Length: 119
Image (cartoon, rainbow, N blue to C red; front, side):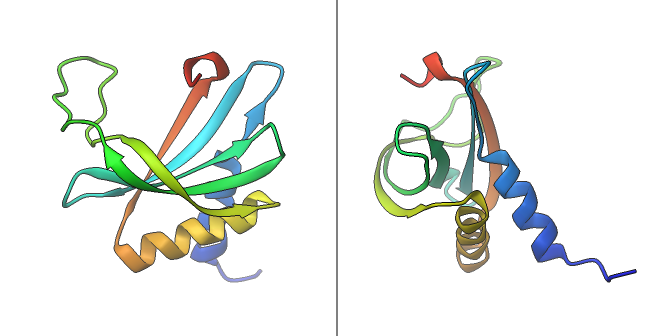
């Protein structure tokens, strides 16, 4: 039996979180969160218009979260970003996310949205 590979395990989980389900209009995305500043630093998602996986670097954030409603998250969401990279396959985007998380000591957050919620 092969030995457990935590990098492969993590990459596969990240890659499978980046999805687009045309039947249900669901989009899966991954954010990398800085726990010290409580801000989203990187975002990744599938782009159905061109079929690529996009990783973005946040450049501006919403006000600090208040956690007054059930839908609030415990970190400031990015409101603007720059393209960090485009990838043809989810595994390549996932590998980049894993490297960024290691480099900057970031935590992952997975979000699933209905397509019409993000527009």
